[in-house]
Picture (cartoon, helix red, strand yellow):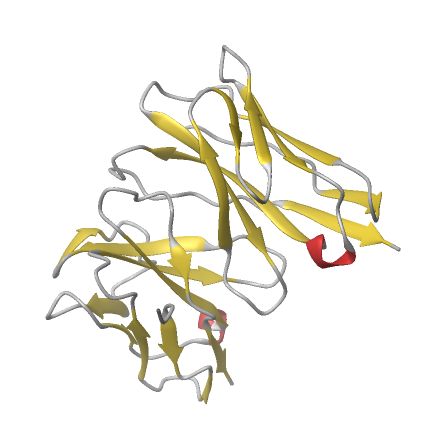
Length: 114
Length: 111
Protein backbone atom coordinates (compact mmCIF):
# COMPACT_ATOMS: atom_id res chain seq x y z
CA UNK A 1 0.00 0.00 0.00
CA UNK A 2 0.91 3.65 -0.12
CA UNK A 3 3.29 5.05 2.43
CA UNK A 4 3.11 8.32 4.30
CA UNK A 5 2.92 11.26 1.95
CA UNK A 6 3.66 14.89 2.63
CA UNK A 7 2.90 17.98 0.63
CA UNK A 8 4.43 20.15 -0.53
CA UNK A 9 7.86 18.59 -0.86
CA UNK A 10 9.43 22.03 -0.80
CA UNK A 11 8.11 25.33 0.49
CA UNK A 12 9.87 28.66 0.26
CA UNK A 13 8.28 31.53 2.10
CA UNK A 14 9.15 34.95 3.43
CA UNK A 15 9.69 35.85 7.03
CA UNK A 16 6.40 36.67 8.71
CA UNK A 17 4.20 34.61 6.38
CA UNK A 18 1.89 31.76 7.33
CA UNK A 19 2.45 28.21 6.06
CA UNK A 20 0.59 24.93 6.17
CA UNK A 21 2.23 21.56 5.75
CA UNK A 22 0.13 18.49 5.07
CA UNK A 23 0.60 14.85 6.03
CA UNK A 24 -1.34 11.84 4.74
CA UNK A 25 -0.61 8.87 7.01
CA UNK A 26 -0.82 5.21 6.14
CA UNK A 27 -4.42 4.05 6.12
CA UNK A 28 -5.34 2.43 9.43
CA UNK A 29 -2.59 4.09 11.43
CA UNK A 30 -4.20 5.85 14.36
CA UNK A 31 -1.03 7.50 15.64
CA UNK A 32 0.55 10.41 13.77
CA UNK A 33 3.74 12.29 14.64
CA UNK A 34 5.36 15.48 13.51
CA UNK A 35 9.11 16.07 13.73
CA UNK A 36 11.47 18.63 12.33
CA UNK A 37 15.04 18.02 11.32
CA UNK A 38 17.84 20.50 10.87
CA UNK A 39 20.94 19.72 8.85
CA UNK A 40 23.22 17.24 10.59
CA UNK A 41 20.80 16.64 13.45
CA UNK A 42 18.36 13.89 14.26
CA UNK A 43 14.62 14.48 14.03
CA UNK A 44 13.20 16.61 16.83
CA UNK A 45 9.75 15.65 18.13
CA UNK A 46 7.02 18.28 17.81
CA UNK A 47 3.60 16.72 18.41
CA UNK A 48 1.85 13.37 18.49
CA UNK A 49 -1.79 12.56 17.70
CA UNK A 50 -3.73 9.52 18.77
CA UNK A 51 -6.82 9.66 16.61
CA UNK A 52 -8.09 13.22 16.42
CA UNK A 53 -6.59 14.49 19.63
CA UNK A 54 -3.10 15.68 20.39
CA UNK A 55 -1.73 13.19 22.90
CA UNK A 56 1.52 15.08 23.40
CA UNK A 57 2.34 18.54 22.06
CA UNK A 58 5.26 19.18 24.37
CA UNK A 59 7.68 19.50 21.47
CA UNK A 60 6.00 22.47 19.81
CA UNK A 61 8.57 25.26 20.22
CA UNK A 62 6.09 28.11 20.76
CA UNK A 63 2.55 29.22 20.09
CA UNK A 64 3.29 30.04 16.46
CA UNK A 65 3.14 26.30 15.79
CA UNK A 66 -0.14 24.46 15.73
CA UNK A 67 -1.29 21.14 14.30
CA UNK A 68 -4.67 19.58 13.66
CA UNK A 69 -6.02 16.20 12.67
CA UNK A 70 -9.79 16.79 12.53
CA UNK A 71 -10.91 13.42 11.17
CA UNK A 72 -8.21 11.24 12.57
CA UNK A 73 -6.42 10.82 9.27
CA UNK A 74 -4.82 13.74 7.43
CA UNK A 75 -2.93 16.22 9.58
CA UNK A 76 -1.87 19.80 8.95
CA UNK A 77 1.00 21.54 10.69
CA UNK A 78 0.48 25.29 10.73
CA UNK A 79 3.18 27.85 11.35
CA UNK A 80 2.29 31.49 11.84
CA UNK A 81 4.62 34.46 11.45
CA UNK A 82 7.43 32.29 10.16
CA UNK A 83 10.98 33.07 11.19
CA UNK A 84 14.26 32.18 9.51
CA UNK A 85 14.96 29.77 12.36
CA UNK A 86 11.93 27.72 11.34
CA UNK A 87 13.78 26.59 8.22
CA UNK A 88 14.14 22.81 8.43
CA UNK A 89 12.77 19.58 7.03
CA UNK A 90 9.42 18.79 8.62
CA UNK A 91 8.81 15.06 8.87
CA UNK A 92 5.56 13.27 9.49
CA UNK A 93 5.28 9.66 10.66
CA UNK A 94 2.44 7.30 11.47
CA UNK A 95 2.08 4.02 13.30
CA UNK A 96 -0.42 1.52 14.63
CA UNK A 97 -1.34 2.35 18.20
CA UNK A 98 -0.11 -1.10 19.23
CA UNK A 99 3.38 -0.45 17.82
CA UNK A 100 4.20 3.16 18.66
CA UNK A 101 7.93 2.72 18.27
CA UNK A 102 7.64 1.33 14.74
CA UNK A 103 6.92 4.54 12.93
CA UNK A 104 6.70 4.97 9.17
CA UNK A 105 8.07 8.28 8.00
CA UNK A 106 7.17 10.38 5.02
CA UNK A 107 9.77 12.05 2.80
CA UNK A 108 9.38 15.37 4.56
CA UNK A 109 8.68 18.95 3.56
CA UNK A 110 11.70 21.19 3.23
CA UNK A 111 10.71 24.62 4.53
CA UNK A 112 12.90 27.58 3.73
CA UNK A 113 12.10 30.93 5.30
CA UNK A 114 13.83 33.81 3.58
CA UNK B 1 14.30 9.95 30.33
CA UNK B 2 16.80 7.44 29.00
CA UNK B 3 19.51 9.18 27.02
CA UNK B 4 21.39 7.24 24.35
CA UNK B 5 25.03 7.58 23.40
CA UNK B 6 26.44 6.20 20.15
CA UNK B 7 29.54 6.90 18.05
CA UNK B 8 29.31 9.91 15.78
CA UNK B 9 30.69 8.07 12.77
CA UNK B 10 32.04 4.74 11.57
CA UNK B 11 33.78 3.56 8.42
CA UNK B 12 33.65 0.12 6.88
CA UNK B 13 34.25 -1.72 3.64
CA UNK B 14 31.85 -3.67 1.51
CA UNK B 15 31.32 -7.22 2.68
CA UNK B 16 32.32 -6.56 6.28
CA UNK B 17 30.11 -6.94 9.32
CA UNK B 18 29.41 -3.68 11.09
CA UNK B 19 28.53 -3.43 14.76
CA UNK B 20 27.23 -0.16 16.17
CA UNK B 21 26.98 -0.02 19.94
CA UNK B 22 24.66 2.29 21.83
CA UNK B 23 24.62 2.93 25.55
CA UNK B 24 21.42 3.69 27.46
CA UNK B 25 22.30 3.51 31.10
CA UNK B 26 19.00 4.85 32.40
CA UNK B 27 16.71 2.56 30.44
CA UNK B 28 13.40 1.91 32.19
CA UNK B 29 11.63 -1.40 32.63
CA UNK B 30 8.95 -0.53 30.06
CA UNK B 31 11.41 0.72 27.46
CA UNK B 32 12.16 -1.01 24.19
CA UNK B 33 15.31 -0.39 22.15
CA UNK B 34 14.67 0.66 18.58
CA UNK B 35 16.98 1.38 15.68
CA UNK B 36 16.25 3.50 12.64
CA UNK B 37 18.18 4.10 9.42
CA UNK B 38 18.12 7.34 7.45
CA UNK B 39 19.38 8.02 3.95
CA UNK B 40 19.97 11.58 2.72
CA UNK B 41 16.79 13.41 1.75
CA UNK B 42 14.57 10.66 3.14
CA UNK B 43 12.70 10.11 6.38
CA UNK B 44 14.07 7.59 8.88
CA UNK B 45 13.19 3.94 8.37
CA UNK B 46 12.53 1.48 11.18
CA UNK B 47 15.10 -1.33 11.20
CA UNK B 48 14.65 -3.40 14.33
CA UNK B 49 13.36 -3.37 17.88
CA UNK B 50 14.10 -5.50 20.91
CA UNK B 51 13.68 -5.78 24.64
CA UNK B 52 16.36 -8.24 25.70
CA UNK B 53 18.74 -10.92 24.38
CA UNK B 54 18.84 -11.13 20.60
CA UNK B 55 16.49 -10.18 17.82
CA UNK B 56 17.15 -10.90 14.15
CA UNK B 57 15.29 -9.93 11.01
CA UNK B 58 16.12 -9.87 7.31
CA UNK B 59 18.06 -6.63 7.68
CA UNK B 60 19.97 -6.75 10.96
CA UNK B 61 20.48 -8.31 14.35
CA UNK B 62 20.14 -6.59 17.67
CA UNK B 63 22.06 -7.80 20.70
CA UNK B 64 20.99 -6.68 24.16
CA UNK B 65 22.85 -7.83 27.29
CA UNK B 66 21.04 -8.86 30.43
CA UNK B 67 21.42 -5.48 32.14
CA UNK B 68 19.99 -3.73 29.01
CA UNK B 69 22.26 -0.74 29.54
CA UNK B 70 23.61 -1.05 26.02
CA UNK B 71 22.70 -2.60 22.72
CA UNK B 72 24.54 -3.47 19.53
CA UNK B 73 23.13 -3.25 16.04
CA UNK B 74 24.84 -5.73 13.74
CA UNK B 75 24.71 -5.33 9.97
CA UNK B 76 26.04 -8.43 8.18
CA UNK B 77 28.10 -8.01 5.01
CA UNK B 78 27.42 -4.34 4.38
CA UNK B 79 27.20 -2.88 0.90
CA UNK B 80 27.59 0.66 -0.39
CA UNK B 81 23.82 1.10 -0.06
CA UNK B 82 24.10 0.70 3.71
CA UNK B 83 25.81 4.09 3.91
CA UNK B 84 23.40 6.04 6.09
CA UNK B 85 22.84 7.49 9.54
CA UNK B 86 21.74 4.98 12.17
CA UNK B 87 19.79 6.09 15.22
CA UNK B 88 19.45 4.22 18.48
CA UNK B 89 16.36 5.11 20.46
CA UNK B 90 14.75 4.03 23.68
CA UNK B 91 10.97 4.12 23.58
CA UNK B 92 8.20 3.32 26.00
CA UNK B 93 6.51 0.16 24.75
CA UNK B 94 3.08 1.78 24.96
CA UNK B 95 4.16 5.01 23.31
CA UNK B 96 3.41 7.12 26.34
CA UNK B 97 6.55 9.08 25.70
CA UNK B 98 7.73 10.54 22.40
CA UNK B 99 10.71 9.01 20.66
CA UNK B 100 13.86 11.06 21.10
CA UNK B 101 16.37 10.95 18.28
CA UNK B 102 19.98 11.83 18.96
CA UNK B 103 22.47 12.74 16.27
CA UNK B 104 22.95 9.12 15.26
CA UNK B 105 25.96 7.27 13.86
CA UNK B 106 27.01 8.13 10.34
CA UNK B 107 28.15 4.91 8.66
CA UNK B 108 30.27 5.25 5.54
CA UNK B 109 30.80 2.07 3.54
CA UNK B 110 33.73 2.14 1.12
CA UNK B 111 34.16 -0.11 -1.93
